[in-house]
Length: 483
Image (cartoon, rainbow, N blue to C red):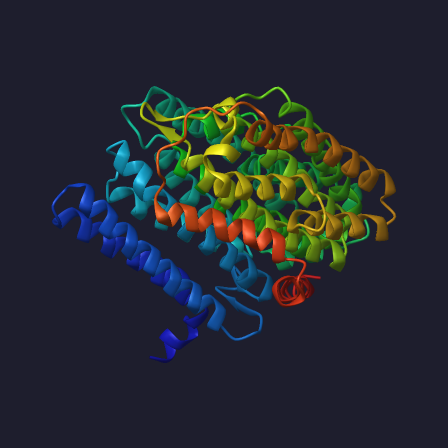
């Protein structure tokens, strides 16, 4: 019993892993039909809610297990809540779409749970080996869900592209990890931090190259330029609920992992890794802004939007101060809501021939479905950073941190990229409200309408103190546990 109590900080991960195995067995022994998939799906959402409660109920202290390989702290709890929320809402959005395309199998929610288990491990990784185990547990499940519609060529192609490029990035990450281990003598972040704080650490070419390769592997996971090449094709080819999942929960976990690695393993090499992060931020913001301008498919548009948003979040990380980390956390929380709300609207774009994805299909939506057009309009305005919506405050916090760190050029280019990006968000709004109306979309499920309505409402009321302030305070407290 005493041994079980020492594992208490690990209960959320254990609950999720065991629950996934139980649901897998349940699905195997139930009748193999669409009803089984939905039953397992609702049980999976319930399990995610239980695990979320376990995370929130954990004591507000830092605990290290397995010689520091697994860390539970305020930062981890904050990001785990975002990961679990993203996974649960993505599952909720998937039922009706997968049922319509006759792909609502019980394996899908089980794979989402296994991927989420890997994400929780990534968020708490305090060791290079734990980092890689969590990353691969997540990735192996994501490779399968990307190609979940086996009878669809685009879905199979998306899964194959993600697998090939993911394997390449994993190889680079492992090479970087091996160099770091070779030059520090340990895989523990704490020991690596001690070595990285030495006087000549910045001149240690092997350690610097190891850090570069490690960041290359992680940059792939967050779709940072120039390691973004998989994102538009996979977002477009994967089933839309899978794309919503890709754009939400895995991004939270990967960004948490990048922040934890740099803040806890390499705090003494800030001058070295800041240069890399500044380049990734600039390249992602600019390519995301310019690349989206010519897109006609709304899922590809959201892919480039995701790339740009990761660039904005990296601005806060580049500042390398407590305000910057707080800005990253606030930005990712707001980004999660904006993304899930936007994909909920995309899932409602259905006519008799099936789902439609072209931006022109939204023409005149305000005349046929004013509520849906208003919700997507608010989400687009928020993604563009128009005040006083939540997206504006996300950018405010990261740019403010960059200014405080005297990184004026980065903040100025970020603002310019934000203005350029506003063009394609406003184009979507123009199409919905001013173009000639096309036939109305089919009636959408209530659960999907509720998701985009709540997301749009949160964008509006974030400025109200009792909504936004707790998020900002929680992000500040979480950032302090790392600095």
